[in-house]
Length: 363
Length: 94
Image (tube, rainbow over all chains, first blue to last red; front, side):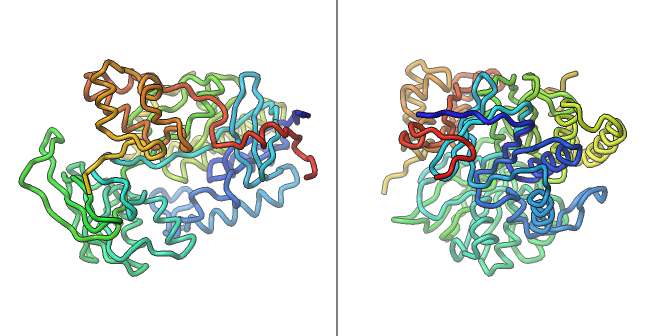
C-alpha cells in the first residue's frame, strides 16, 4: 500500500460562500490554494437561494444567491493558483496537520501549511412523536428539492419555524404551487425579517407564535400534524391543540455549526447558543487556537451568507499574508474587509451575533 | 401505529431509550453513545447530538454549555474499508 502525502500551501475545506471567498482572497494575494468540496458543484447553500439577499447594502444586497455562486465559482475555476476539487470529502484532520480526503472511491492525503475550515452547518431537528414518518423534511432539504431539482415534496405543508429560512422557504413553496397550512414558531416573536413575514401573511398563511409541533400522525406517511401552544416558560398547554391535515412537515429550527474537523484538529471550542452551538475560539483573522488553522462561515457561527463571504476573505487574506504573500497593501485590505464585516453586523439585527462573538473572540 | 419519537435516525434510538440511559446514570454524550449507539451511524451524530445534549441538560439540571462534546475521530464520513486500504496519491491515475 502506497500512501503519498501532497504538500500544499493552503487548503480550503468547503466551497460555499466562505470557502469560495477564502480561496479567491488567498490566491489573489499570490498563494497556491487547493479547494475541496464534497458536493459535485461549488457554491454550497448559495445554489439553492433563489431569493434576493436582504439586509445590508454594503455587500451583495438584492442579488440572488444562485447568481453569486455562479460568479464566485467562475472566478475560482478560472484562477491559475486555485485547484478546485469537487466530490472530494475531507474525512479526517490528523494531529500532524494531515488531511485525509476521499474522492471518487479513492483516498489521498494533503499536508497543507494553512487550513481554512469552511464546512458550514447542518440542520437541527426536533424530537416529537412520529418524527420518522416519510414526509418530514428539513427546510434545507426542501429547498434543495424544490429550487435545485424542481420537485415538490407534497401538496400541503406545515412549516415549523418562523426564522428567515422558514419564512423564505414558505414563500418559495407558495410560488412553486404548494398549499401552506400554517407556520408554527415556538418563540413569542417572528424571527424573520418583517418584509419576508409580511409577504407570507399577505398570501394568507397564518403564523402561530408561541406554538410548537406536538406530534405527527399517519400510516405509512404523514397525514397530519397537531400543534399546541407554549406558555411563558415554554411549557406546552394541554387543551390548546390544533390539527392540520398535511402531507408534508418542514422543520426550520436552526442550524448547527459543523465542527468535527476542527475538533479533530484540536481547536478549542465553546458552546455559544447565539452562534448555533459549539464553535471554535478565533482571533480577528479567524485563526483558531491551533496556529495555521482558520475557520470561516457557518462553521464559525451560524450567520448570513454575506458575513460568511467576508469571514472567508479575512481568513484567506491572513493565511496568505502569514505565508509571506501580499506584504504590501495587506493592512488596507484587511481594514476594508473588517469594516464591511462590522457594518453587516451593526444595528439591532446583528446584536445576537455580536453578543455570541464576545464569548469566542480572542486576542 | 404506535407513537414513537426517534432521536437518532441512523441507529433508530428513541427518546425513551435516551431517557432510560440518563435515568441509569449516564451523564455525558459519550456515555449515551456507548450505551445506545446514537451518533455512531452514517451521520455521526450531526442530527441527534443537539437533541440528546438538550435532554441531558434538562433532565440533570446541567447547563448545556458545560456538556463535553463526544470525541470525533476520523473518518468523519462513511468510508469503505477497501477505499482506505487501497491508499493512493492526489494525482494518481485510476
